[in-house]
Length: 121
Image 1 (tube, rainbow, N blue to C red):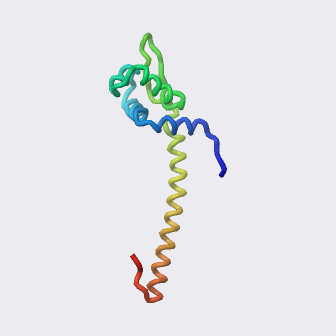
Image 2: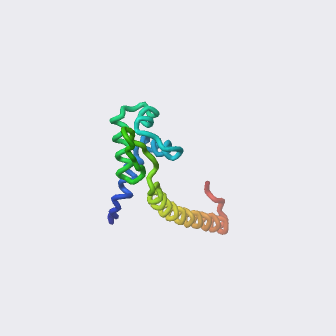
Image 3: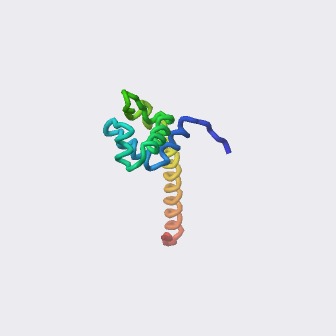
């Protein structure tokens, strides 16, 4: 099997594999928040939330900025374009395959009708 290496895409999917991190991204999509605010919102310890934010930051999905004692988080510039592009390519591939399968099924139904058989269901 051929394996394609794309560390950034792997990091994005790893970051998105956790429901808390997806929730953090959703929250930050609405507005910036401090790590403390996020920890409170998700009923987590500050240390736990820092770890989640760190994974998102390493994937380029979140950017943090420290102002004084507060670390503020916002959605990163890269956002989810790479992930969406990867998914879209595979969606097109599968759509084409299912369209071909639909065509084969229709041809088989027409052949059964022309042979005088009732189509099976």
